[in-house]
Length: 252
Image (cartoon, rainbow, N blue to C red; front, side, top):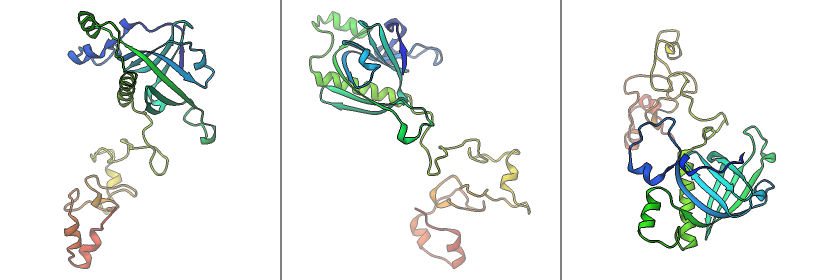
């Protein structure tokens, strides 16, 4: 969490309703989108968060989840990949954060749990104007569960916009897809040709690599006629001579 001492300015954000109603002029350097602004109470067994006195402004933006306590002149900016659990419990939204570095041992990982109880939703931009013209007496909905649902959905939506850049580890713990691997992008070029040709000049797949195009090609050692095509289980089971069966193996 990044500590901040200046309250976010609503003018620094683009309200979600305005963002959805127009085509942005640029996708780079534009203002973050404010998905939701809720006045809330926060409960957490953590020294830093206990310094935030209620009420706390919760800004759910397209870049960060921001908590700011005006009375304490203190807040925190939370990256979405840090949030490991998001859940709704009645009128509350529960969050769990991973505060440890990537190389921290499992037994030393520090988690933080917090409970956010939103009291009302602040409207901005066109939504605020529509609410004022309608003569609404309160700024937000009256149902605590409705407010909680809106906050939960906003955080979940922004989490999807900010996936963990580390991706999911594979079985060997070496990370996900490596697009720099020879042939990984589906193209054989002059730079990686040597990886696909044996000493006799015949095409082959490097050890440990598979043919992209279907599960049936997993473990294939050569590229020949029909490479990249798929066959049904009936075709595989249909038999043929032993030589044909040795070429096509069922996987899974």
